[in-house]
Length: 255
Image (cartoon, rainbow, N blue to C red; front, side, top):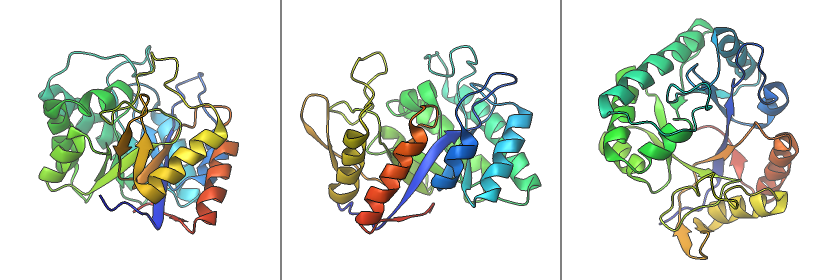
Protein backbone atom coordinates (compact mmCIF):
# COMPACT_ATOMS: atom_id res chain seq x y z
CA UNK A 1 0.00 0.00 0.00
CA UNK A 2 1.54 3.30 -1.13
CA UNK A 3 0.66 5.74 1.60
CA UNK A 4 3.39 8.38 1.83
CA UNK A 5 1.53 11.67 2.16
CA UNK A 6 2.63 15.12 1.03
CA UNK A 7 -0.63 16.73 2.17
CA UNK A 8 -3.00 15.77 4.95
CA UNK A 9 -6.22 16.98 6.53
CA UNK A 10 -6.60 17.57 10.27
CA UNK A 11 -10.22 17.09 11.34
CA UNK A 12 -11.87 17.71 14.69
CA UNK A 13 -15.33 17.04 16.12
CA UNK A 14 -16.93 20.41 16.80
CA UNK A 15 -20.17 21.94 18.00
CA UNK A 16 -20.58 19.32 20.71
CA UNK A 17 -22.10 21.63 23.29
CA UNK A 18 -25.83 21.44 23.96
CA UNK A 19 -27.92 24.20 25.52
CA UNK A 20 -26.22 25.33 28.73
CA UNK A 21 -23.86 22.34 28.66
CA UNK A 22 -20.42 23.12 27.21
CA UNK A 23 -17.97 20.73 25.55
CA UNK A 24 -14.56 21.64 24.15
CA UNK A 25 -13.06 24.98 23.13
CA UNK A 26 -13.97 25.26 19.46
CA UNK A 27 -12.85 28.89 19.18
CA UNK A 28 -9.32 27.99 20.30
CA UNK A 29 -9.04 24.82 18.21
CA UNK A 30 -10.64 25.89 14.94
CA UNK A 31 -7.65 27.95 13.66
CA UNK A 32 -5.43 24.86 13.77
CA UNK A 33 -7.56 22.29 11.90
CA UNK A 34 -8.54 22.05 8.26
CA UNK A 35 -11.93 20.35 8.54
CA UNK A 36 -14.64 20.34 11.20
CA UNK A 37 -17.20 17.61 11.90
CA UNK A 38 -20.26 19.42 13.24
CA UNK A 39 -22.51 17.61 15.71
CA UNK A 40 -26.06 17.35 14.38
CA UNK A 41 -28.15 17.19 17.56
CA UNK A 42 -28.48 13.46 18.25
CA UNK A 43 -25.43 13.13 20.54
CA UNK A 44 -24.72 16.84 21.02
CA UNK A 45 -25.35 20.14 19.31
CA UNK A 46 -28.48 22.25 18.91
CA UNK A 47 -29.57 24.77 16.26
CA UNK A 48 -27.78 27.72 17.86
CA UNK A 49 -24.60 25.72 18.36
CA UNK A 50 -24.65 24.41 14.79
CA UNK A 51 -25.08 27.94 13.43
CA UNK A 52 -22.26 29.30 15.59
CA UNK A 53 -19.91 26.44 14.69
CA UNK A 54 -20.57 26.85 10.97
CA UNK A 55 -19.89 30.59 11.24
CA UNK A 56 -16.65 29.93 13.14
CA UNK A 57 -15.48 27.45 10.50
CA UNK A 58 -16.23 29.96 7.74
CA UNK A 59 -14.15 32.62 9.49
CA UNK A 60 -11.13 30.32 9.53
CA UNK A 61 -11.56 28.77 6.10
CA UNK A 62 -12.22 25.31 7.54
CA UNK A 63 -14.13 22.68 5.52
CA UNK A 64 -17.42 21.72 7.17
CA UNK A 65 -18.78 18.22 7.56
CA UNK A 66 -21.79 16.66 9.27
CA UNK A 67 -21.17 14.44 12.31
CA UNK A 68 -24.28 12.27 12.74
CA UNK A 69 -24.79 9.92 15.65
CA UNK A 70 -27.10 7.38 17.14
CA UNK A 71 -29.96 9.12 19.03
CA UNK A 72 -28.19 9.11 22.39
CA UNK A 73 -27.83 12.51 24.05
CA UNK A 74 -27.42 11.05 27.52
CA UNK A 75 -24.64 8.70 26.44
CA UNK A 76 -22.97 11.18 24.06
CA UNK A 77 -23.53 8.75 21.20
CA UNK A 78 -21.03 6.25 22.59
CA UNK A 79 -23.47 3.46 23.51
CA UNK A 80 -24.28 0.78 20.97
CA UNK A 81 -27.86 0.30 19.81
CA UNK A 82 -29.63 -2.29 17.69
CA UNK A 83 -30.38 -0.42 14.46
CA UNK A 84 -31.10 -1.50 10.90
CA UNK A 85 -29.60 -0.29 7.64
CA UNK A 86 -32.77 1.68 6.87
CA UNK A 87 -32.76 3.28 10.32
CA UNK A 88 -29.12 4.33 9.87
CA UNK A 89 -29.96 5.78 6.45
CA UNK A 90 -32.87 7.79 7.84
CA UNK A 91 -31.14 9.14 10.94
CA UNK A 92 -28.02 10.02 8.97
CA UNK A 93 -29.81 11.84 6.18
CA UNK A 94 -32.00 13.68 8.71
CA UNK A 95 -29.03 14.93 10.73
CA UNK A 96 -26.73 15.73 7.83
CA UNK A 97 -29.53 17.56 6.05
CA UNK A 98 -29.87 19.89 9.03
CA UNK A 99 -26.19 20.79 9.07
CA UNK A 100 -26.16 21.18 5.29
CA UNK A 101 -29.02 23.69 5.56
CA UNK A 102 -26.97 25.87 7.92
CA UNK A 103 -23.89 25.59 5.69
CA UNK A 104 -25.82 26.55 2.56
CA UNK A 105 -27.57 29.40 4.37
CA UNK A 106 -24.10 30.76 5.13
CA UNK A 107 -23.16 30.54 1.45
CA UNK A 108 -21.12 27.35 1.48
CA UNK A 109 -21.37 23.66 0.64
CA UNK A 110 -21.23 20.62 2.87
CA UNK A 111 -17.79 19.06 2.40
CA UNK A 112 -18.08 15.65 4.06
CA UNK A 113 -19.84 13.33 6.46
CA UNK A 114 -18.23 11.47 9.33
CA UNK A 115 -20.25 9.27 11.65
CA UNK A 116 -19.79 9.73 15.39
CA UNK A 117 -18.95 7.40 18.25
CA UNK A 118 -20.76 4.09 18.42
CA UNK A 119 -22.33 4.58 15.00
CA UNK A 120 -18.86 4.98 13.45
CA UNK A 121 -17.43 1.98 15.30
CA UNK A 122 -20.43 -0.23 14.54
CA UNK A 123 -20.45 0.65 10.84
CA UNK A 124 -16.69 0.12 10.63
CA UNK A 125 -17.38 -3.58 11.22
CA UNK A 126 -20.89 -4.00 9.75
CA UNK A 127 -21.50 -3.92 6.01
CA UNK A 128 -25.26 -3.31 6.36
CA UNK A 129 -24.79 -0.30 8.63
CA UNK A 130 -22.10 1.00 6.29
CA UNK A 131 -24.60 0.73 3.44
CA UNK A 132 -27.03 2.87 5.45
CA UNK A 133 -24.41 5.59 5.85
CA UNK A 134 -23.37 5.36 2.20
CA UNK A 135 -26.96 5.60 0.97
CA UNK A 136 -27.41 8.77 3.02
CA UNK A 137 -24.25 10.35 1.62
CA UNK A 138 -25.33 9.51 -1.93
CA UNK A 139 -28.78 10.98 -1.23
CA UNK A 140 -27.16 14.22 -0.05
CA UNK A 141 -25.47 14.56 -3.44
CA UNK A 142 -23.34 17.57 -4.21
CA UNK A 143 -20.05 15.69 -4.05
CA UNK A 144 -20.21 15.16 -0.28
CA UNK A 145 -17.22 13.07 0.76
CA UNK A 146 -17.28 10.29 3.35
CA UNK A 147 -14.68 9.98 6.09
CA UNK A 148 -14.11 6.29 6.85
CA UNK A 149 -11.92 4.17 9.10
CA UNK A 150 -8.91 3.18 7.02
CA UNK A 151 -9.00 -0.44 5.89
CA UNK A 152 -12.50 -1.13 7.23
CA UNK A 153 -15.60 -2.62 5.59
CA UNK A 154 -16.96 0.93 5.74
CA UNK A 155 -14.20 2.02 3.37
CA UNK A 156 -14.89 -0.89 1.00
CA UNK A 157 -18.65 -0.25 0.87
CA UNK A 158 -18.14 3.49 0.27
CA UNK A 159 -15.63 2.89 -2.53
CA UNK A 160 -17.83 0.25 -4.16
CA UNK A 161 -20.66 2.82 -4.19
CA UNK A 162 -18.46 5.32 -6.03
CA UNK A 163 -18.24 7.86 -3.21
CA UNK A 164 -15.28 10.16 -2.70
CA UNK A 165 -13.61 8.55 0.29
CA UNK A 166 -11.15 9.98 2.80
CA UNK A 167 -9.43 7.40 5.01
CA UNK A 168 -9.20 8.49 8.61
CA UNK A 169 -6.63 7.68 11.26
CA UNK A 170 -6.56 8.68 14.91
CA UNK A 171 -3.76 10.49 16.70
CA UNK A 172 -4.73 9.59 20.25
CA UNK A 173 -6.32 6.15 19.93
CA UNK A 174 -4.71 2.73 20.03
CA UNK A 175 -5.67 0.11 17.50
CA UNK A 176 -6.64 -3.55 17.55
CA UNK A 177 -4.80 -6.06 15.30
CA UNK A 178 -7.69 -5.98 12.80
CA UNK A 179 -7.29 -2.22 12.32
CA UNK A 180 -10.31 -1.20 14.40
CA UNK A 181 -10.02 1.23 17.29
CA UNK A 182 -9.33 -0.19 20.73
CA UNK A 183 -12.62 0.01 22.68
CA UNK A 184 -12.80 2.86 25.17
CA UNK A 185 -13.50 0.23 27.85
CA UNK A 186 -9.84 -0.81 27.60
CA UNK A 187 -7.53 1.07 30.00
CA UNK A 188 -5.01 1.57 27.19
CA UNK A 189 -7.52 2.74 24.55
CA UNK A 190 -6.37 6.37 24.65
CA UNK A 191 -2.86 7.68 24.06
CA UNK A 192 -2.34 10.43 26.61
CA UNK A 193 1.34 11.18 25.94
CA UNK A 194 1.79 13.96 23.38
CA UNK A 195 5.09 12.63 22.03
CA UNK A 196 3.62 9.16 21.53
CA UNK A 197 0.60 10.58 19.68
CA UNK A 198 2.78 12.68 17.39
CA UNK A 199 5.05 9.70 16.72
CA UNK A 200 2.06 7.53 15.81
CA UNK A 201 0.78 10.13 13.33
CA UNK A 202 4.20 10.61 11.74
CA UNK A 203 4.61 6.87 11.25
CA UNK A 204 1.15 6.59 9.70
CA UNK A 205 1.92 9.48 7.37
CA UNK A 206 5.47 8.44 6.43
CA UNK A 207 5.14 4.65 6.41
CA UNK A 208 1.42 3.90 6.22
CA UNK A 209 1.72 1.67 9.27
CA UNK A 210 1.05 1.61 13.00
CA UNK A 211 1.65 -0.78 15.87
CA UNK A 212 -1.45 -2.44 17.34
CA UNK A 213 -2.01 -3.20 21.03
CA UNK A 214 -0.52 -6.70 20.63
CA UNK A 215 2.62 -5.43 18.91
CA UNK A 216 1.55 -6.43 15.40
CA UNK A 217 1.90 -4.00 12.49
CA UNK A 218 -1.25 -2.71 10.76
CA UNK A 219 -1.27 -1.03 7.34
CA UNK A 220 -3.29 2.20 7.10
CA UNK A 221 -3.94 4.99 4.65
CA UNK A 222 -3.87 8.43 6.26
CA UNK A 223 -5.86 10.99 4.29
CA UNK A 224 -7.21 12.74 7.38
CA UNK A 225 -6.17 12.68 11.04
CA UNK A 226 -8.77 13.03 13.79
CA UNK A 227 -8.00 15.46 16.61
CA UNK A 228 -10.28 15.05 19.63
CA UNK A 229 -11.18 18.58 20.63
CA UNK A 230 -12.89 17.64 23.91
CA UNK A 231 -9.55 17.14 25.68
CA UNK A 232 -8.05 20.04 27.65
CA UNK A 233 -4.72 19.41 25.91
CA UNK A 234 -6.22 19.51 22.38
CA UNK A 235 -4.82 22.90 21.34
CA UNK A 236 -1.20 22.42 22.45
CA UNK A 237 -1.29 18.92 20.96
CA UNK A 238 -2.49 20.04 17.54
CA UNK A 239 0.11 22.81 17.57
CA UNK A 240 2.85 20.26 18.29
CA UNK A 241 1.48 17.99 15.56
CA UNK A 242 1.43 20.80 13.02
CA UNK A 243 5.07 21.62 13.82
CA UNK A 244 6.07 17.97 13.40
CA UNK A 245 4.23 17.67 10.07
CA UNK A 246 5.75 20.92 8.81
CA UNK A 247 9.21 19.56 9.67
CA UNK A 248 8.39 16.60 7.40
CA UNK A 249 7.24 18.98 4.60
CA UNK A 250 3.66 17.71 4.89
CA UNK A 251 1.12 20.37 3.90
CA UNK A 252 -2.21 20.71 5.70
CA UNK A 253 -5.41 20.94 3.65
CA UNK A 254 -8.88 19.45 3.39
CA UNK A 255 -9.18 17.54 0.12
